[in-house]
Image (cartoon, rainbow, N blue to C red):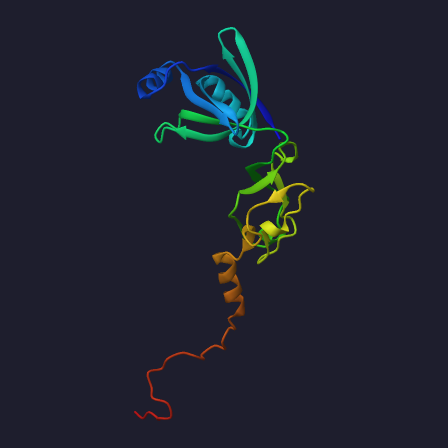
Length: 220
């Protein structure tokens, strides 16, 4: 699993007013907590957090926090448990860091990465990528950065479900096995082309309307 290093400082004040003033200074209010761990209010530099976020999927990476308080410094391994953002600017408002221990199982949503070119797409099908993460549980050291799914053999009408994923021993998939990850389906264009090919061309003159009643001769 990818590990991102991030500096943090102990936060002395709490509440909406101090939090707003911190954001005006380019700092993000945060908190660190975990099972059996003391809750620690923190601040994180917004520019440093933005740089770390660009390095990878920060929501699915380990965060090594270097927590500073005056002359003391301690390192804590964590994950981003919750990230609150401004709905308009998408800038971070608050971060929850959750402590992880290497000897305790961890549950995380791991991204899915598609590999290969589907034969069904080359034949005119449409790719539906409906599930982009899978929930895994294992010791932190076993969790992968992503799950690779090979779609090269997918033809039109084929699909890959959660139950088709194979992982190394010690990793448990918590999503139901019948949940679809990716499929190749018929497109509307493909259906129209097939329908047109099936229509037989009628001999010239057949099927035309004359305006005369069947079996009735006309006289001048």
